[in-house]
Image (cartoon, rainbow, N blue to C red):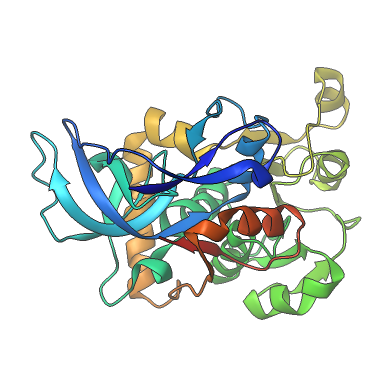
Length: 309
């Protein structure tokens, strides 16, 4: 099969289209013929080996894809040949992908694979961040990097949950974020008292987020570090007390599978209610994966990106 292999630690320019053996589904796994693969900022970080516990080059890149089940591993009864599924697993930038059944879900009725990308990653991350942040109607929520895949999902969900939604994005993307549902959009963290902050930027903005969170009751949910590492000390939290909550979807899936299943059930209900619409990602051919990741790295993109094998 064809696959995009990362060959170095020097970024997406060193992704190479290669021919490798098709994988085989093991116990509790399914083999999927990929129709669309999602591109995420973590993919960019992995190409530089800066993603914590990420793969070491050479490796087949990507970890989110949709497609058709073409083989079942031993003991699999929850899926059947021909099922259309979405899932998370390493090696998604390829024509075939092995998924654990616990990391896969059926596509929503009437949705294509491309339209479904982001449900188990972007939308699930946004929903998990809001739920872990114990968001309540009437509160103020700040969504960092609100023009991205997770950011737009978080804005829509926070608005649906009855909050006042503030957001950060580059000025050229402000109107897009307002259309997604933000009440106000800023270039950087505003000087406000904010109940819940969804922090995915890191770097210098991390300190700004901590400073903006409402003392004692303010919650900062950390699920990304696109702008680099940031530190916080016990002294800082002692004198500027806020509630700091970490989120990594892979860890949540592994350590709290029941909670992850609840999130997927809630997502299904939100889809049925029309709160979550089908996606419309910008698509690239598999061979153009390096260009897609470079565009994402440059912050020039809006919304979801996808690769089509």
